[in-house]
Length: 377
Image (cartoon, rainbow, N blue to C red; front, side, top):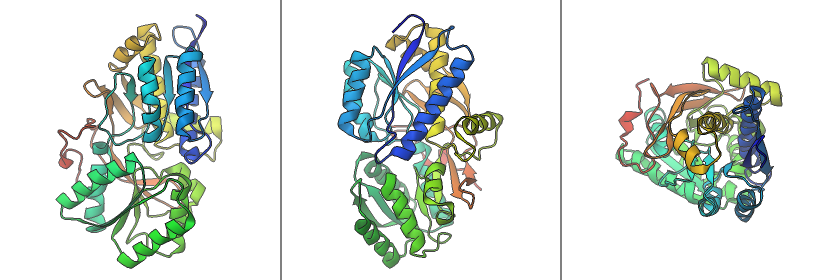
């Protein structure tokens, strides 16, 4: 790395099972880097990204993380999306004393001095979703998810909240990451047979898109029994078709329809850079915000030395598109803004509920009470 630039790694899959959502991570990252550089860089030097595409393969994530840290003279990586990919790169990042900026919502129960966690923890999305479904749709909830750590952990927490509040989990099914059409149809058949009040889905990628289309084709009343998710955001709805998704629910900390000046600027810049037809989402926004957080920390540290950046970042307070965010130094996670959105005919979301302010992250669920985030409609 020359003294005239700040070199960083970017490690998101723009192909493979999570192509759509991780491309959103990539675009949010790219836009923020371009904005920082257009404003003069950091201390007069541009941020220069070295980007690789792991294609959704966990071995590729490991190998490319090692390549960035060992061969490309990089200390900082913006990357990983699925929990499996984070778990794949974490030992490499720790061994090389790098710093991973991780922008996805995830299951929590993790702490590393070598990770900056900028996505939501379960107390910042799952608690609100459980309460919303029980209050507005009914007590009988059907669970279906991909068979890996994030769906299993989020379902475990969701079950605890649902049952503690008098609800019932009528079925809990786990599918392969690359679930085929026959497997998905069997889930639809179970839903038709059991007639739950809502479906909590943690299926991801292309199988999730097929599942939403099949749900619409089955003619199930989405107003009576919507699919509720933590991940099915604006970009994937555009891929599925908005007409097949109206009425479905997303619990997230950001929607394109958030009303504030910072978000207006973000949406305008995103569309100007990538096309008027694109949408922002809970995938692009945290990736965008974490680059700006990093740039501010770098300006004070004056160095890419991992320990310096790791310390300085925890001091940051930033007006992001979702609202003001800052770090909880004890957990290395962000205070974020829980919201519930209902999909509408244009592929965006009406915000049906939002917390009155940012909610402290509780990745180990040691202190959270659901009432901390619930606001009467």
